[in-house]
Amino acid sequence: MNDDTFYEIALKNLANEASAKDKALLERYLQDTSYEAKYKALQNAQVYNTLSPVYNEFNLKRGLEKLRKKIKEDEKRKFLINKKALAIAASFALLLSVGLWFNKLYVSKTAVNYIVASSLKGQRTQIMLPDSSTVFLNAGAQLRYPEKFSTKQREVFLTGEAFFKVKRNESKPFMVNSGNFKTTVLGTSFNVNNTNATNFSVVVKTGKVKVENTKTNNQFILVKNTQVVFNKALNTLEKSGINADYATNWHKNILQFNAITLQEAFSKIETWYNVSIKCDSKTLLNKKIRAVYNNKPLEEVLKSLEFMVGLQYTIEHNTIIIK
Image (cartoon, one colour):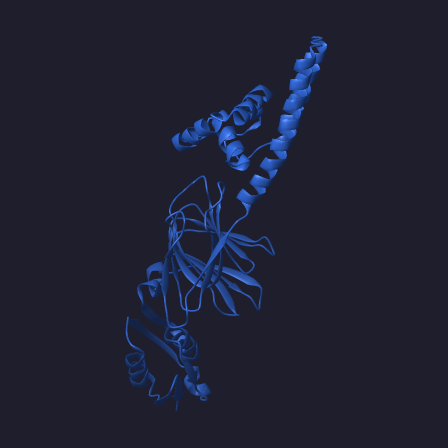
């Protein structure tokens, strides 16, 4: 039998937090007279009264203070029986040892193990978080999240672009950290994009979102069909309306170009299909295009661009050369 396990289930039982399985295991421990004595000492010391409703938040300082108070009360009543004095001293020593053990247990319980999910270039990845929220990672994105969320909040860390469908929980806000920005929600769907060196953006599809620049403390509240864009070079934030369905369609495997330059389109194509594009024509790169491709292969996208802007291309291994 193990002392750590005994103290854990004993304290849970005294705090009315023990499961049926815990109680059954405790009964087995108490068949041993040494563990039975330890359990009675815990009861006498009233250790369970130092526990919060969540048993692993043991307050050693408060527990010791209660024992000191109890000892003083006993002294005032002039109970000079040696056995009782020894029992109190034994209880104090036991509480101290239990407190040290619980401190060790609490530290181990609060150590957070993280999972890192990545989406390779040319891929879009869907993952489910511990709270059943869903995240779609765009190509090249990475999300770090705990194996189990804390009791107070749900916090994740994003590099790249992701679309979130957050399960509503008003008592546990959901936070996305990306660079110098924190996006906080209770339950909603939204897109966070921090893929390039120029802009950071958040688009809200449903619900309400708070976006905060942790460096400057600037904040924006966004609702459905609104976005905020931070220009990293100019250090400016701009809030505007947007068609959120259109802006977040990528997580449905829809590649779209909404009045962007061909240079920007090429950058998206490189990440989307995991290829390299070479083009030396500035005139061509500055042309603006609009297009939507629903789960189309690379060759079909290139032929479409060939028709729209008159470009010519060749493919050598994983590199597309634009002429």
